[in-house]
Length: 156
Image (cartoon, rainbow, N blue to C red; front, side):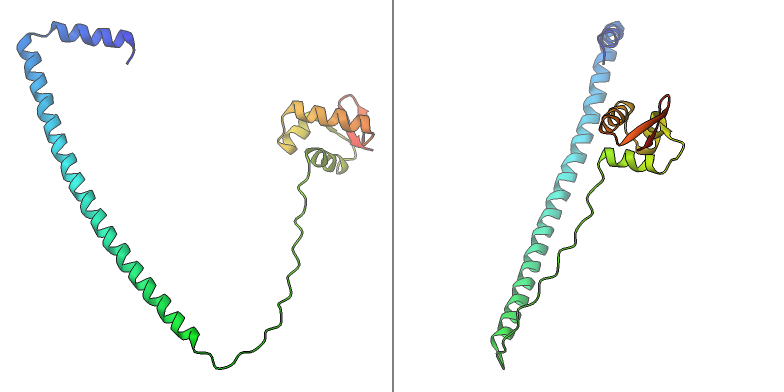
């Protein structure tokens, strides 16, 4: 509420006669007691749900412990012991390295024979114009691209 809204509300309240103010306050108080009763009922329901959850967790833990005991007893009975050969480790798959921003721009330029301007590179790569212009300037100095016309570049 802004200051002006608060002042307007205060003025409207002051214009009401005293008995209406009292009646309004009593009505609000009754609404609050009803709301308080609803909250208390909800609180009881939440507590009851909490107790049920605790019981379910205890039952789950008991069943889990019983399963673990059964598995342990089954493992203790062994008929033979055999030597296992060590398993060969699988070769780790090499992940392809992510293309750098410069590589992305160069790939776009390689595919175009007539050349590309900076605005097209912005649309294709999703980079902002400043970043694209910096990449163009750097790669031009390195000799990786060349100018075909004003603002149009191709790969060297």
